[in-house]
Length: 532
Image 1 (tube, helix red, strand yellow):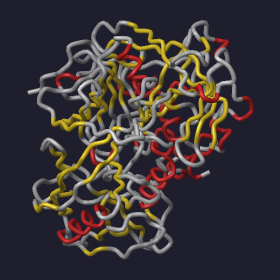
Image 2: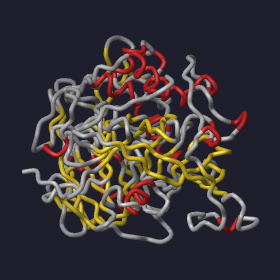
Image 3: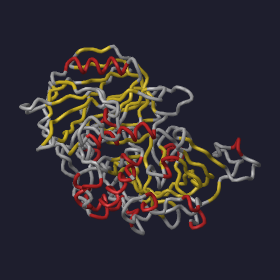
C-alpha cells in the first residue's frame, strides 16, 4: 500500500469505511501525519486560491492565531512488548487550523464507525459528537466549506458494544453533578473560556492492531464521551469530529491501554523536521536506550506534561533562562512569559546580522528580519535548550521564512523567530516547532520525557511496510493569524538556503507525499474553516 493510500485511509471520513496503513516496527501501535497546507495537498484538490500559501505571512498568522484561541489553557529500543496503533495503521495528519496539530482516523464501536479526531496531549477525555441533534456538525458544508464532506456521528444505540457509565462507577469523574448513583454519568470539559464539550460518559470498543508483521487485531474498552453539546471553536472550525486526549489522567486512552495491560504506559509522537512532512504516533513505545531524557514535573492543578528548563544557549553563548514549561502538541509555536521571552529574543536579535523589520501590532511575531537581496543563505544563531538532568534539544526550526509580495515581481524574503509572547497564559508552552525533527516519548511509567532526532520513517525501530514520502523542505515552522495591514499581501516563499552558523539548509519548498484527491480534499478543506 503506498503513501497515497495511507493518507486516504486516514481521511476516510469522506467515505463509508476508513482504513489505515499498518506499520512494521519494534512492537508499537502508530500512524503518520501530514500537514494541512502542503502544496501536494492543495494541488491535488485544486483550491490553491482558497487557502493561505505555505510560507506566506497569512499562513503563519493563521497558525499563531489558532494557537492562542485553542490554548487559552545505534538505535536500541526500550520496548519489551509489541506496541500498538489504531486498527487501520499509524497514519496521522497535521491539521493545524482545526485546533490541534495532528489528527487521526479512529474506529469505534461494533460494527466499527470511523472518526477524524484531534490528538491532544493537553487534555484527557476521548469524546465524539453524539446525540447532539441539530447542533452536530454533520458535513463540512455546515460550517461554510464550499464542498460536501460528510462526517460520521457516534450513535450509542447503533453499537452493540456500547454501554452507559453510571454515577456509581469509579470512572465517573463528574459524579458531583449526579442526581443519583443510578444516573448516567455527566461530564463537562472546558478547553478555554468559550470552547468546551458537555455530555455523558459511556464505554465502547476502540479498534487497534499490533504494530508488527502480524497486525493482530486488538479491541480495547475505553471510556468515551458522548459529546451532546459543543461550544466555541468546536462548533465552528476546530475538532468538529472529536478529540482523543493523550493526557495523564486515568480516563485518557494511554492510561486505559496501560491499565488493561494492552501496552506499556508510554507512547511516542514523531514530528516532521519541516512543515508538510508526515509524522506518527505509537502507543506502548518506550523509545530508545540512548535517547535524551528529562523528568516530568507535576504542578497542581495542571495535568499537562511539564518539564523544567535549566538553561538556553544562543549562538553558543549561555542565556540565563530557567523556567517550567508545558509540552503541548496542540500549540504550533512556543509561547514564553516574561522575562524569559525578552531574554531569549534579545539574545537572538543581538546575533542576527540582517535588518530587523518594524514591529506591526497586527502581526504577532516581533522579531522578523529582511534577508539581504544578494544573500544566498540565511545565517542564524544556533539555539539549544537544556533541561533537568543535562539533556539538550538543538532547535531545527527556531524561525520560519516567508516572502512579502511586491507590486512588480517577487517580494523580499523575511524570516521570523517562531516564539510568541505568552498572552492570557499563566505558564510557558513548548510547541511543536521546538521539537520538529524529533521523536518525542511520553514515558508515563518512568515519568520522563524522552527525545531523539528522527525522520519518523527511517529509524530502525520505526520501519514501515510502506515507503515514506520524500523528505522535502517547506518554509520553516508554522503559525496562525491574519496578514498585517502595514505589510503587503504575502505569497509563498522559495527562499535561499537556510544556514545556522554551524550548519546549512537547503532551499525551502513545500513538500509532502503525493496524495490522492480524496485524501487531499479533506486535508485541504479543513483549514478553510478558519477563514469562513
